[in-house]
Length: 328
Image (cartoon, rainbow, N blue to C red; front, side):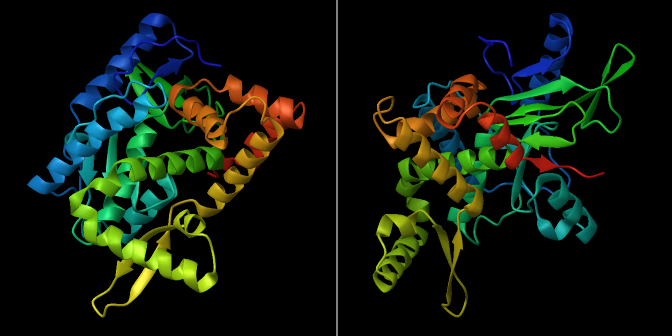
């Protein structure tokens, strides 16, 4: 487990574990400098004035949003958000991005301390901002590296003429192995981040005037589906993330990211609340426990709750069942 309390977060990296205090401080300074100097990426296009303004607004709202979870957010400049033009990448380059980050829509690079967005703002502003918020939440979440003694490390840094290999130790709620081959709780982590994204959207994005027409189209579609299927509107709203209208006026809906992972996570939250109602005032309080663990790194309260509810070894089993394995 990480040691607490921590110093104020100054980049996307909270800790570098396995080194003495002086070396860890040097590495944290390295990531801080990368975060502050975030440079123009290959394949990146210049942002419009509207995009810069709306990214600044998201940053301001993110600071307020994370206060609800007792977290002091770091300021994310538009310079840390790189809008990448897919047409400037080869199919092989796009394939590598997909393999590395699991998506071509957007990603947070802990090594480069920036967010890459591969969506067109003008094509669908809601979808663009949903991706921005999702990846910013990854950046705001707890993240630590650990010293690696294995080949093929995720990142190699130079320290006093020595090359130091490191792999991810913690990424939000997920936990990495020293050899970098397994990330436990990966699915749980993505479900939590997406749930936080949806809460941010309802609290802030739904008030953005730039999104009015897209939100109206989505709401109309949700109401139609609810009437057609005789389903509660809130149930449909939990699934439908956006509605895309093509040139012919045809509508296509897209779910929020990590739909299956979110379903399993929702079942876990429901079960934990059902069996521990005397300890929580609402289901949301159970979710908040997971959210705070993701954002602060304090996982122990969640582990204790799961072990108390489902028995010894249940937390480890959950981690293994929601892991991602990297095959060389």
